[in-house]
Image (cartoon, rainbow, N blue to C red; front, side, top):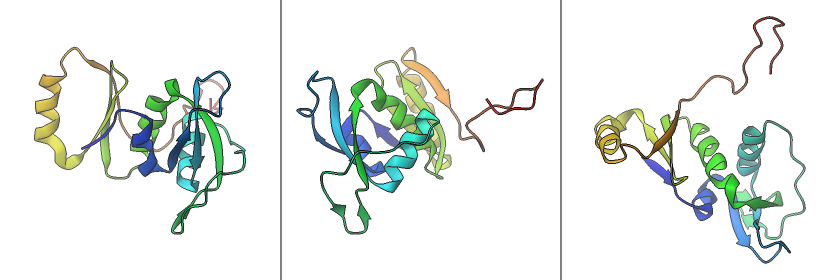
Amino acid sequence: MKRIDGIKDLEKFGIEVLTGESDQHMHRILCDCTAKGKRIIERTLGIEVTLAPNWNSGRPEDPSIGSLLVPLEFVSSFGIFALLSDPQTAEVWLLKNDSVVGFSTDDVDLKEALRTHYEGQLRKVFFPRPCDRNVHLFTGRTT
């Protein structure tokens, strides 16, 4: 099981928290991104993103390639797609407190125990799909 409760939990997915003092509104957090983090952000938003220059170099094996300001409301959405991007993930839960929990196929007993524990707290369940977009049945276009 993997869990994302806040923005710091996105660091293992390539979105590294730097500071909240970069935003004059004090609403967004400055983050450096690796290539993996950028892919997660682009998958979440469904668009290609041009990042601002990175502030830190990152780790030699996984360097930072750019930066962006992340609103805290985006954390759970980035967390959902970060977990769905992990090939080991079979199911992702979004809880009412905006925590995100991902289960592998081996987590069957744990998942059932947590389903009882989180009864009434589960907002939505996501499953990995071969594509994030639907095809419009009448026109055949991708939405």
